[in-house]
Image (cartoon, rainbow, N blue to C red; front, side, top):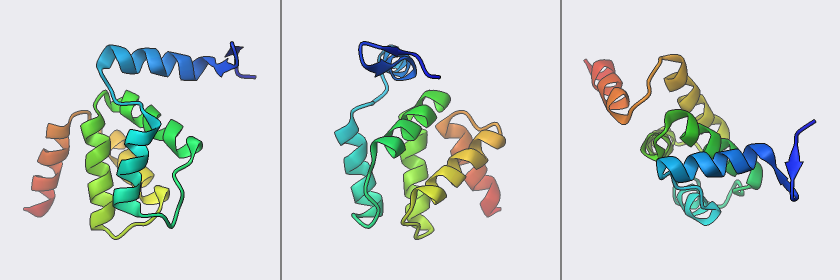
Length: 111
């Protein structure tokens, strides 16, 4: 069972602390705007999706990587979270940790 302090999940509290320390954007409206821009209104941006995006931002330590995944998903014509998650998982599995690693991989894939 998850621990709860003052009505908030401990993991959410820990994420907010880590986000502040790293200077990461964790505002719901910020990510919702990105979501609507790239995926439209077909699939609503939910708290569950928001929490997973926050986990990815914390994992990579850089929101730019997650934003680039939004661009890649849009490039593929994706209209769902599944494609975004697949892109991020593939980068994680390939031990990609910085936006420069992402760019290097994209260049290598072209040649």
